[in-house]
Structures are given as C-alpha cells and as structure tokens.
Length: 196
Image (cartoon, rainbow, N blue to C red):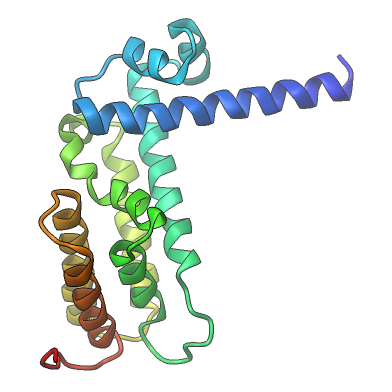
C-alpha cells in the first residue's frame, strides 16, 4: 500500500469515527441511554458492522463518546480563555463563559452539562474511571487558578446549573447574560452586586 492510499484510509477512518461520535451524542440526547448500536449506525450513515469495526461494542462506543465529549468541552473552555486577564480566576471565568455564552458554541458546550440526562451511561463500569479522571482534571485546573476552593465550587456549579436551565428552556438570553456577568464578577474575587 502506498502512502497516499494509507493517508486516505486514515482520513476516512477518522471521518467515520467522528460521524459515529457526533451521531451518538444526538441519538443519546434524543432517545436517552438505552440506544442501540443499530440506531447510532443509522444516524451516522454507516453499517452496524462498520460501527463495530471502529468501536468494538456499545460500551467501547460509550467510553469513546464520553472521552470525546470531555475533550471537546475542554477545548471549548480553552477557547474562552482571555489571555489578557492577568489575575486569579482565568480558567474559572473561561468555564463560565463557555457554559453561559449565547452562541451556538455554548449550545454544544451545554451538551456536556446535559450528560447527566444521558442516564444509564454512567452506570457502565468502564465509564466511571473516565468521568473520575475528568473530574480530577477539572479540579486540578481550577485549583491552579488562585481562587478559593469554595468560590470555585459555587461559581462552577452555578454555571452548570444555568446551562441546564437553558437546555430546559427555563432561562432566556437576558437572564443568562445577567447570571454570566454576576458569576464572572464572583470569579474575580468580587461579590454579587445588585443588578441595575
């Protein structure tokens, strides 16, 4: 096999893998955790045997999906880092911006926070260490931010709650913007001010 053929096969395998992971997110968000490989394969436009070639089993697909979702969310948060901010709380503020932004990018970041809605995924034993590793990663990253653990917890969980409320349609853009501004202030060692 020549290099050009090998390169095309690698790109095709990567495209297929990406299509399956993207389809799996949507199918799980639409139907819940009881999805089948056949449903994901159909949504991705691949055969069930093609899906199994890439992931081996439903559990392997779910683990890959959780790993991919975690990494995509990390990338989204990193894209919201403001490198001009030279004071504590930079990563925490990026986390808030990622979850509480009013853009399509924020909607995809909210897919991460809707992960608990996926129900049974986290009952799969092989998913547990992936989620534990992700939690440790976030704890470490945010701890490096120079803000108290209590403040980090409050701001982080509040941002996640706002994102969940947005998913359920309980918050409009204006209220999300107000909440984001308050959380950004709190993530800068500030205190809540009374909105005008």
